[in-house]
Picture (cartoon, rainbow, N blue to C red):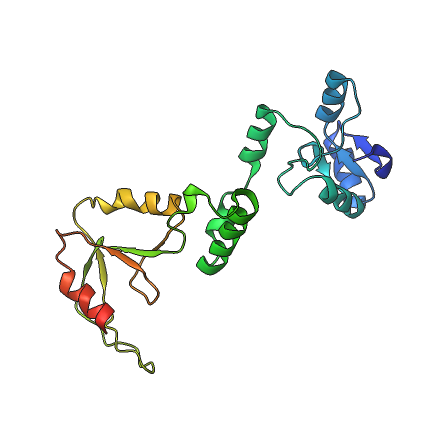
Length: 206
């Protein structure tokens, strides 16, 4: 961002900074911005990593040149800078999205950057149930029109399931792993030790 878009102050004393932030009229930057400008012998654009407080107008300007994690749309970056950006990324954002929306986000990234042919999305169209639970006695199914599927209780297996290793692999290749049996599951991976075959068959034939 060109510096004439912004008014800025360097901060040294916490009390003064607090007062400036409370007024909300000034952008407050970290001294590291001056250090980096000096070391690079040029006036650097402001970026989220330099900001202690950003006014509304400056936030709009920043949004035009960097993404929310501080990665510049225009400037060349090196490996160290990319590592900083990755470390700032909130990796829970996608994981907390509903499955359908999460899938749309992943599909958009795949389409935009990999042309829809990313090998890491080989399992994306599929939804898995991994047979890692002892299915208990059937519970009366909810009264829904056209639904005769049984409802089970789920108790974690007493042994370490090999399917625990499969879970992150399926997710890595773009598949969705469901914690319970549900309509829309395309693949079931069975653990022979648990002997849930009959209950699984009854559910999908219901």
